[in-house]
Image (cartoon, rainbow, N blue to C red; front, side):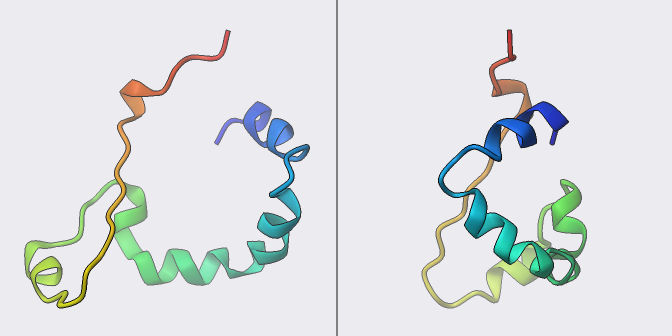
Length: 67
């Protein structure tokens, strides 16, 4: 995330919550493995999920530029 975006977020009402949970990020990253680097979860892992799941996805090419 660009430093400017972080600087803007520091003024947002949700910043205190994000800061309070920041210590969990290394564990979150370890649990997510390569999927945090843009590599999707393998098909066999996805097919083993047996409960409803909301999946979010983003496309960096659709992010508006900051002017």
